[in-house]
Image (cartoon, rainbow, N blue to C red; front, side, top):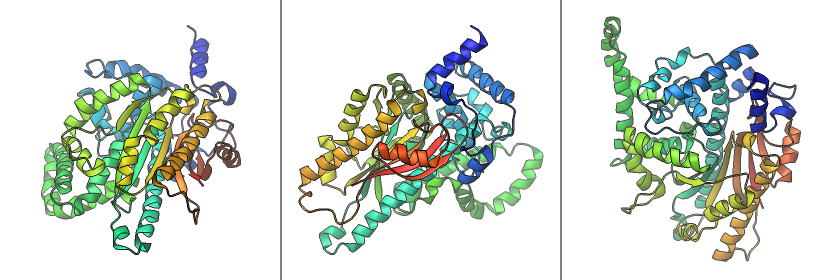
Length: 455
């Protein structure tokens, strides 16, 4: 197969590559501007040849890096490559996507050291830095959405006058990740929730925090091997009490540390192809929860509110093929209209759903991304109507605009060739969404934004 034939095959897989190309145009922010907007370091100023060489080398290294991997996850639609890229950024303490080696803990033993904290700083800021931009945007967008939801929830609680309404249970937030791949955002949100709740529950969450802090302390001690590092150990020990707290704040530049409330339960679903769902379930059970046991112990009690002996899966991994719109609608309706969910909702405050897309629309067939956005907004409206009918709250008209759900994305939308925000508003409005924020960046997944469905 010739180089030209190989390039054409790749363009056929990635929607829009032939039509729009993968280079910048005048309406798309440059790498430095996009990075500045989300608070990350810009990508390296490199030639097209350097980008291509880095791409080919990384793709070639996937097989040897996983040669002795017992899990052997499939690199479906670059999902595995993205995991390694996110592990590099996640090990960078100066990055807003620093994740306490969470993505790193999904990687195979031995070979993962090449993206360890010691070495990640030496990687040229190319593909992993481009992915870091969209990761930082989505983390900040999700944080902003959660804060908005909780502000509205707390305001409603404060304005309640009766004793019964003042004792409203925790807010429930449902996160649905469309095409999650091997991303760890839902797990990262769980882990940060444990840290944030450490002041509220001395018996459980502080223990989890100590486990997490012990892990980072142990990793730090491994660096103090040489004699000249030992000379610094005495000074580090003298300042240990101060630095242990400040280090948590400094590395806590991650957006999730800016979540202002802990009075919510999180319910996470990740939809993807069957091969990815199977592989990720194996990675979580046999690798991540073994390396981070506090997550396995705490995901039910603190997040799902489940004290039963039956283990509750978090996140809930669901098989889906987005090119099949009817099947996708059935999956979403099964999540949002499920009778079990309605029973849970009757015992707690109303659920708010957040749908997230990251780098999945670029692999869908023509016309599917536009239809999929319309499908999501339609199911959210349908779930609201179903909830109103089951609780008989639709007799009185709403007194203000009600948000039915949120959308955050870092992907390639249809009908927006470049980074034109006006075109983005038109596209989102035509699919039933109200665009709140929009930002473009270089690369294939060039459109990033936040939207909502209102009634």
